[in-house]
Each structure stands twice: as C-alpha cells, then as structure tokens.
Image (tube, rainbow, N blue to C red; front, side, top):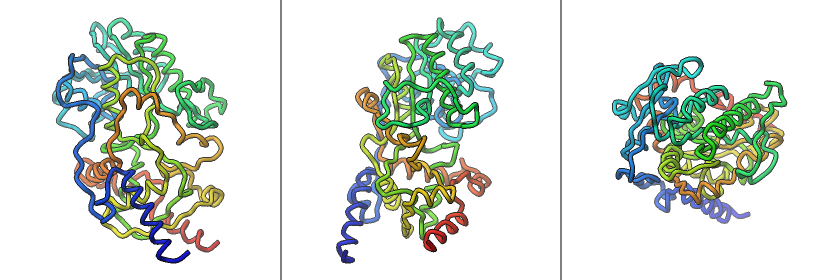
Length: 384
C-alpha cells in the first residue's frame, strides 16, 4: 500500500473516532471545541419535588446523583458512616441532610422516617440490601438498587439484555472475585425486589467513568495521553469497547424515579458501537501531545505478558467474551442520554490534575501499566 493511501486511511479512521467522541471536524485539526453540558434532566425544577434518600452518597456515583437531584429541586438525605468525603461537587453537600450509621449493624437513623425514593448505592453484602429494603419498604415509595452487569458473569454470550438470567451461585467457591461480586449483586437485587415488588428499580451499569472516579481506570488514559510518545495500543483495532459518563448514569437514575419506572435496566455506553481503535484515536484528539501508536493485537502475547485489560478495553476471551456486548436498547428507549466522550475525557483530565486529587495519589495510581512495564512489553513485542 502506498504511503499516501495509508495516511488517508488512518486520517479517515481518526476523523471517524473524533466524530464518535463528539468532537467533530475541528478536533481532526487538533482543536477540541467547547461543549455545552448534555444532560437528561433540565436544571429547571421537576414537576414534583421528591424526598430522596441515598444509602452511601459520598464515593463516586453518589456526588453526581446529589447534584442531579438538587438541580431538579429534590430534597436529598444521605446515609453514611461519616468517614468518606466527596471528591467532587463538595459544595452540594451543604444542601443535603446527613444521617450517620452503618449498614452492617446500625440503621437506627433510618427509623421513623419517610421518603419517596431510596437509592441503594453502597451495598457490599447482599444482607445489607435485605436489611435496608425490609426496613424501608413501608416508608418509601420506590427503591432503586445500583447493581452491575457483573450479575451476568461469566459473559459467555453476546448481546446480553435484561432477559438473560443473572447468576445466583458462585461456582468458584469464592476464588473468582468477579463471580463472587456478581452473585452478591444478584442476591441484592432479589432482596430489593422481594421487599418492593414492582416498585423496585434495578440499575445494572457496566463500566462508568468521569470526574471523581475511584479506581483510576480512566486516569490511566489521562496520564498516558499527557505523557505522549510511543503508546502501547492493546487489543485488536476492531475490539468493541463500552464506557459511560458517571454523570449520565446519575441523571438517568433521577429520570427513572421521576417517571416512576420499575423493572431492570442495563445501563452502558456509548449509544452506538465503539471500537478500541476509535476510542484510542479519539483520545489522541483530546491532547496536544504527539502520540505514536504501536498496536499489540496478539491475544496470546498479551496473556503471556499479563495484560488482560486497560478499561474500557478488555481481552474478549473465555469468561469475558460478552463483556462489551451489553444490550442497552431498553434504557435508550426510556430516555438514557449521553455526553460526548470527549467531554468525559477532558473533564476527567481537569479533575485529575486539580487539587481534588492528591499528589500522592497521582504518584501511586492503580494503573494497568507503569511506564517501565509498558516499555518492557513493547520491547518484547518488537523482538518477536
């Protein structure tokens, strides 16, 4: 293939990825345009103000739910242990009621109160969902349980929709953390449904990211793009990837309770298919640094070097085959809306380099690859 044709094809893919990121033609020229926030929920008050109780509320998803609810004129109460401080939207927490307790053994602060809606964010044991749902079933109208697409693990099929039965038994005997987590969420769902019936809303998000993320997943790509240079592009170019802005998830939760929804919703993004190549090239147009990609697309090589994921990419093999094949048609039909991924990346970058993230955390992140390890894998790849 001639150089001119090869360059044209690469430019075409890059332009397509810029459009997929919502960046538009100006991004192809190196300038990321300004985006207005894209939200489900208008900042105008909702038709009816709801009393919303959030079990949790200060970790990753919670602060964005708090903001989305307050913007719609709802009253918010959070129930926490009083130990975790929010990493984003800190000023909003002056406008919410704080109840202190412990989901393990102290729900006393929830007694004798009434709410319109409960958001159960913080279940780490299925028994927590049982205890809170039973306690609140006669004092709240709706119960929104934050579950996970992990209930489908192992992901052995494709196009996984809400009709696929979640797993209720951990056949690994606790040895597989993904299986144990998925079963815990399944059992939590069942407890919410048993207590609230058709008043229960089961939200099953897949990977979500954005400002305030707690696991440094997108932080890896923020740091890597800012460092520039030769970048290990893991996986095949056409590997599908999925990711959702945490703010879109939060706003959809508010939308679900405002519209008195019920049932199960897979929640993931983007709305149309996105490949690893489009994702990575989209990131490229969100940075001014010079980036050179080296594609490492041999699954067996990646396995041998211990590189199974760099979220949103995951090695689609074996138990993870359908991980990025989650069907979200129901949520889209019900009103799930999404920001451009360029906005997600840029806002996460701004947060990552702000005072909200300590220098200690930035110096000791939980990244899938360190610079040294990336260099070792690239050297081994070229030496084959």
